[in-house]
View 1 (cartoon, rainbow, N blue to C red):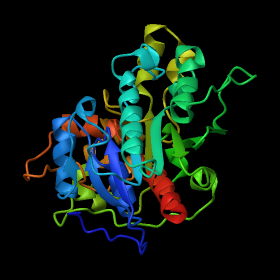
View 2: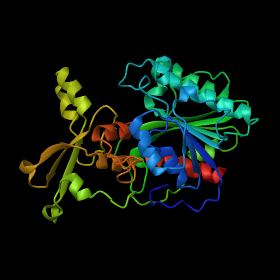
View 3: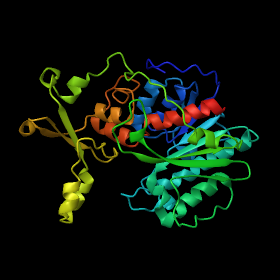
View 4: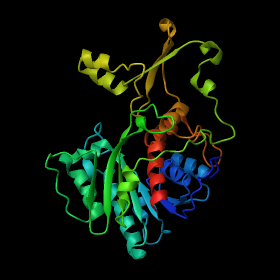
Length: 363
């Protein structure tokens, strides 16, 4: 890695491959627990350049539809946060049949090809991440299809008609556990963003999925700066440290999407409710929008203002090292638009770290 973070003292000799890699959150989290990033698949130009900067020795495989799992280097762990546009509650809900979310099946194909080529030795663990809407899309049949893709077993629908936020199923050669994690409860300190995502762990040895996903463990604290030219938080936020001295800052995020929807529907209660309170977490960062918040010092409300989050602040809300998305591998500046999009599509670092810590322990 090009950044200055140090691997934990884990002599794992484990390797990880990352499909739908984005900006390398799974490789970053894995490397912190001694798991070596080996290869990645991503097609977006800016995220690929960002990841190459931080992991210059990682092999980039490109388009997932053109990868043969039996011909790429075998790895112990394969991770993938497949596209969620067709599963999200704010999308068209086309489900796994949608053109983007159907790429999920290419990841399953690659896993099967690798296991076939290695006589079932690799991968040992796979991790899938996706939006909470995957529980309910396509009349709740999509998540059933996800579980059956991993287990190769018919999985009955829950008698309640709804998928629980945590659970476990077993196939012939694999144990699968899933759990809904909200980023606001993870990290040291915890993140200030509400971000609920499904994390699924499939263990082809059938022994450790529960321990990886449900065991309580302490997360380590890591440096926040990833480059020598660390960005100044004071400059980025536009707030004067001198002016703030002795004053109490008030930050109130609000839900722009909810606000627009309520205004369109003339829903006064919903419109008022879209304005956050002082201790509210920031709404989920999204690839297609920028979050706004109001700021003032206590007693100086009339001097307050509304502004959007900066890319650096978005990195902090995801638990990323500061400046992680600022530059590409050729030292080129990444545009704010590309940074917002990449961060909105990313995975909250503390949630990924929790799982990688469990994998390092169990393997």
